[in-house]
Image (cartoon, rainbow, N blue to C red):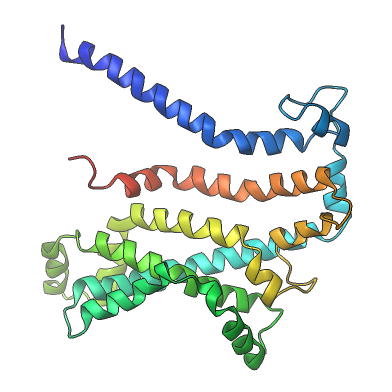
Length: 279
């Protein structure tokens, strides 16, 4: 029996396990999207079955679009998330490059200090952050959310990217210096292209908490002009009555950016997660 023939059952088994885990992970997403196209009676009568001609209803989506400015909330979330990701990746990569490339007194302590943000939740400083934003005149602005989310994402970004940048060949960087390249050119043209998988990993794991966050939009930007998708969806949650059609429709629309980002960065994400695991 050839080696390829003997490895075939193992390959089939690995694919079966992967498909099983994928189905388990996607089941809640599929369930939310499926029920968003049902009437209220269809949601509570048969929540696990697909929409039928009898239960199919777009009332949830019409309510979301008609009540409140949901498209504006979507735009706010998109602006905050994209801007925060840009600054997290830029400043995180630059700090990681400095920590991994240059040796100076206090290098290790600086790395540990930056990593404290992973262990200490930023929400513990909510009162101080609110006072700072009030004093700065940034309450009810998207800038406040961008600053907070950038600070929230930097510790994890620096921690991950610094480990990947240590693996970049010193010979490549020294060759660039010999050719007269500046440190910024070496960073942007030589180092960053080699750590794209890790940056995609950081982007995905940073985006999801930002996009789904309710706490800081509720505290720092609760006005109608600065509401995000997650905060805007709270319009349909009442003390006595909840519009489940609208809630499920809003959640289905909010899932789309995360799925699109995952599709775009899926290959880089998998490479970033599994880098160094298999030799």
